[in-house]
Length: 146
Image 1 (cartoon, helix red, strand yellow):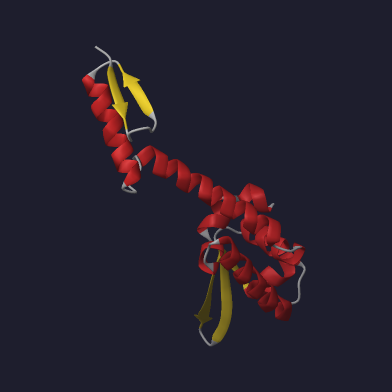
Image 2 (cartoon, rainbow, N blue to C red):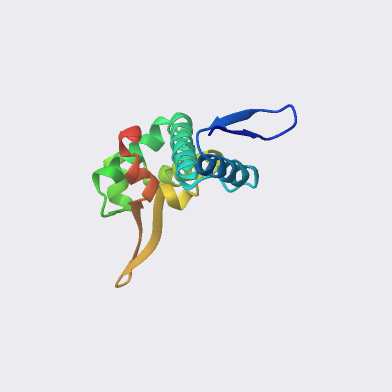
């Protein structure tokens, strides 16, 4: 027996083969209307959104930032600031400015700077230095930044 499911008086409708199909269709429509889209749909939207954000980030970063990304991706376990300077071919003092531009590009793309590059100050006895590691987004989407 065919079951007709209509959402509004003159609105869209569907014809289902069984009452069970009609109930499932109404359940899905109700969940979507309430903002509770099915899990597979939510995951697909998140994946597409993340991919779009990565595309945006890759398109707005300049060549100096990409040199830093390459140097970090060549050293996934981390690298000291001086070694990062040498590997990227940038002045040690210039790295700070480039990191600032990376941070702004990350924010424009919907990421935090820490998702792109992890940076911290470390101590080795009395010697103090900066330590850099690639962030999760940079590692997951390395092919976009190489």
